[in-house]
Length: 156
Image 1: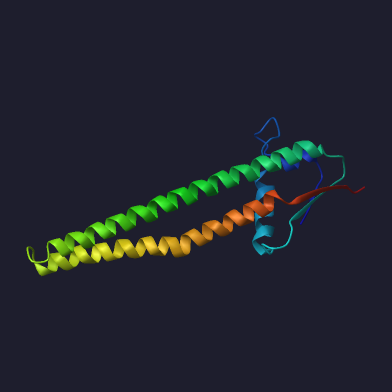
Image 2: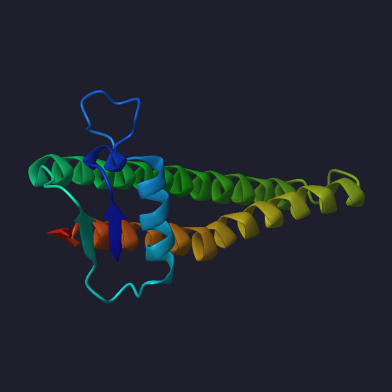
């Protein structure tokens, strides 16, 4: 992917006086290009500018951005796993509760308890099958982005 800029400051967030945070426009552009890129191909980011850019500063800010994205994704994975386990436990408890009370309570209430248990187990499975896969895919994209080659070119 090629990123053409006029000034080095376009790469960084205007509120960050130390130029350690990538600009929202750059992040948005990179993410949009990553959406259509294959997960298998090596990422290459080519920064084209009219003036020389402090390459180390940009690489440091880029690495910081990638690390932050991986932290966010790892948190999402942990929250998702906790949700899955919690819903599974709740589901199992409701099913056990409905079995133990089978002869002691009204059939309608028993069916409601059993349905809640089944629904909770289903939600756990759905989260494991669908959401976990999406989070894992996002993590692979973030790792690919972090391992991207960054090239700098001066065009006059």
